[in-house]
Amino acid sequence: MKTPISNIYVSVVIPVYRSQSILPQLVGKILIEMTKENLTDQFEILLVNDCSPDKSWSIISTLAEQHPFVRGINLRRNTGQHNAIMAGLNHIRGEFVVMMDDDLQHPPDALGELLRALQTGYDVCYTRYVNRQHAIWKQWGSNFNDWVATRLLDKPKGLYLSSFKAMRCEIAKEVTKYDGPYSYVDGLILDVTRSITVIDIAHQARDKGESNYTFTRLLSLWMKMATSFSVTPLRLATYLGFTLAALSMLMIVFIIIQKMMHPEMAAGWASLTATVLFIGGVQTLCIGMIGEYLGRTYLKLNGKPQYTVGALTWKNDKQQHDAK
Image (tube, rainbow, N blue to C red; front, side):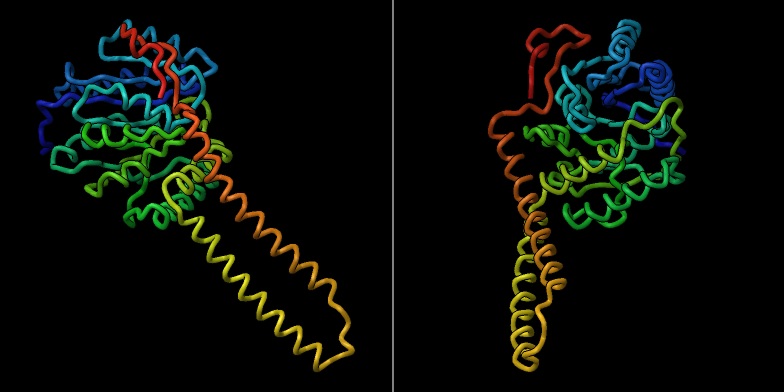
């Protein structure tokens, strides 16, 4: 028997991009689920329009007029999923916060299970897909991201960093203390707490349209994780430098011995060219890695905002033009 949910206020944060046709159905399904959980008057849906080029903001404004629990945030420029989530987290009013996508691949009927997991005492609850509906290349990319996160962020093994998750407002407040321009919500959560649990859900097929996560966006997400929350890539560059230096010394000794034993040995242009190109490539990689860190530090020192709010569906003049 399900444990009843009561005496809590829930915030559902949803970043929106190219989803004008899905939003009414998404809001309707969330309302049905919250009604089942006796939370009809105890929840809000924060729809964060990430400067979508379609009519998503117009739909959000209409939904906010129709439903008092819908609150819309319109960003002035496209900032990416994680920064859009940060914008939503900075405006929540709930004790529990749920983050989900706008494409209905995250089933709203799992909201109750997420909230019950938090009621048992956990700080964060992630979801794990039973039957993923993503393309093969996307699943491979996700698995690679999971492998990297385990090593760079000290992520617990077996924990899948899904974008469908819930956490307590205390954790959300700690997460939003981060003011850098390149936020990675899962990395921030792992920095704050290890009180994390997981529930299994059925992954739904996308209702309409195509996924907004291209290979370039996935690569950008990996770079955020690798360079914003870990110095491991720099350490790997250092280890690689030492290894190459040691191999170079061994190669020099080997060449000297070979030349002494075989004076007639011709100069090895092919091996020399291959060695120079290899070392040059590694040096370029390491310099690029260092440059990525320096670039992010430079942008943070110069106050590059995570996002800039252009409009809200509720009246609050102070927040109307705020930026973070």
